[in-house]
Image (cartoon, rainbow, N blue to C red; front, side, top):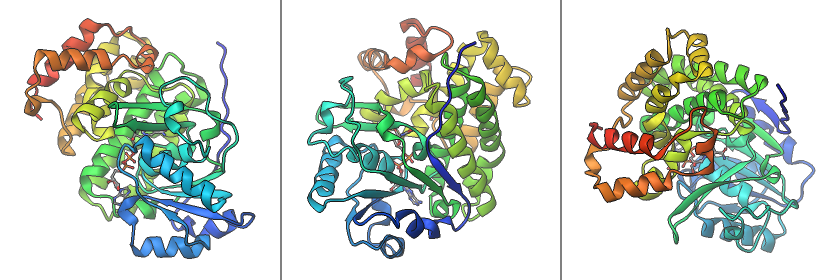
Length: 367
Ligand code: NAD
């Protein structure tokens, strides 16, 4: 078997490591802070300005950031002559910062067009506040163009952050609903990275570790938001799962999540988790999916799928779409829009018949 592994991001993990920001920024003259809108005007924003030694802040960031927001941030970076970005937030803020770092006039020129992103870019120091997307270690930026309804990732070497500072204390304020959604996203990254056609042994080992941590710790982080031990384990799972999927790439659940989020506004992680147990059933014909299930202590993939369903129920996540009362035309659109290239990474070929079965089953399933 041929494989390739690289991991260019300098990773620092631990409680209180936010304090290291001045050391990481010491060689730069014009840092700009890109901060999740949740923290705008907060004590954390003041602390970050002090640590970074700057008043320059961009924080107009929506969940599933829009290409227009990237363009506004890039304009600020050009205008102020920024030489580094400190990105503090969930995947949305970090993805926006990564995309803005190339300082393009119009990021939409590169969004879903296949045109390579410029290599000249500002370094990004990523500090995740959710656990999470793993964006702090990936070469991916997921953007939405609300003018066309398109949500999709841009992959580029330019998007690897220079450094990732994972301080689990930054996740203590995440509310239970977001904890559940981001946590199931971590499980999807680990599982999809493992069963992806692009799998390779280093990412396999990391994926198993990350999946085990989510299964063990998500319920506690969900029901006890102040449990720093659980938060720390999920933060570890998140960064590890980011490493597990960035090279093998995600598969069916992520491909289906893009229309579920862009059309129906279902939060990213919840949209990915919605289909994970269904695809686990489909992929039970794949020996590596069975192998992963065994490594995680399940008798087979069907039992792992049942466990995922129970975990979703226990953490208040959606298990169906019946509230949307989908028409057959709407199901047609979902099937069509699920044909993102990541679908082809699934170990079992996902046909339109399988997608129809998925969305029909979900449309009958209670939330
Ligand atoms: P998010 O960044 O959209 O944040 C979700 C919500 O939580 C927002 O309202 C945000 O303001 C709030 N929030 C963030 N941190 C908080 C905190 N500490 N306390 C309280 N509230 C907080 O959610 P996310 O799941 O982290 O990111 C999702 C985005 O990342 C999607 O666009 C998704 O497609 C993308 N994504 C990117 C990658 C990648 O590798 N780049 C991987 C997976 C997903």
